[in-house]
Figure 1 (cartoon, rainbow, N blue to C red):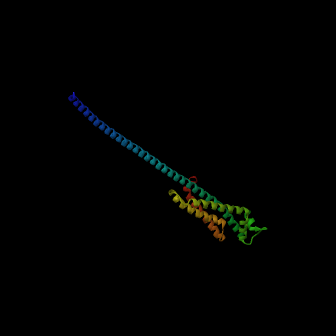
Figure 2: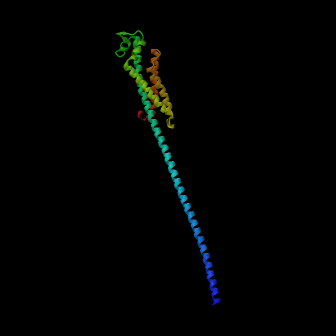
Figure 3: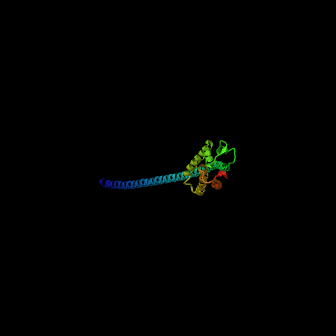
Length: 232
């Protein structure tokens, strides 16, 4: 019986050894499988996160570009509105200056040539007699409250125009040509309106300068019309 039990023990020992080998191999496979699963999961998660971040970055950049484009569009729109506003204000100021300069010229001329005129007599005459010096007639004109109001309106108009011009100093690319024309129109506008505020020279030089300034401003205004949709 002892001789018969020995082989059985050997078989059992061999089976245990084989089982241990199988278990070790199984564990290795399981470990490898777990490692592969972890790696695949990590790669998948990493790829997903990368794509997500990339998409978010693309969305952020696109929104930023859209925002910049919208801001630039808004800037161009506001610039166009201010451009139209300043030109219209120049036109109003020039119209007032034209009215004042015409009256100045008439008062000046009628005082020199002692010409009766229902509108200018109150400036050129004192107690029914013409003033001896045309400067006295011009002083009477500038002391008149109604005329002072007109001159004040022109001065306020100049302040408004100057304020808007400062805001237009850095034009968008597409308005740079318009801005150059605007500066020329602004110079003509100032020359014209200042003639009403500060008349000087002789009657002849004042009349010639007035006509030239009037013509120059209208020419500049006509040039600016191409930039004003409502004025075309």
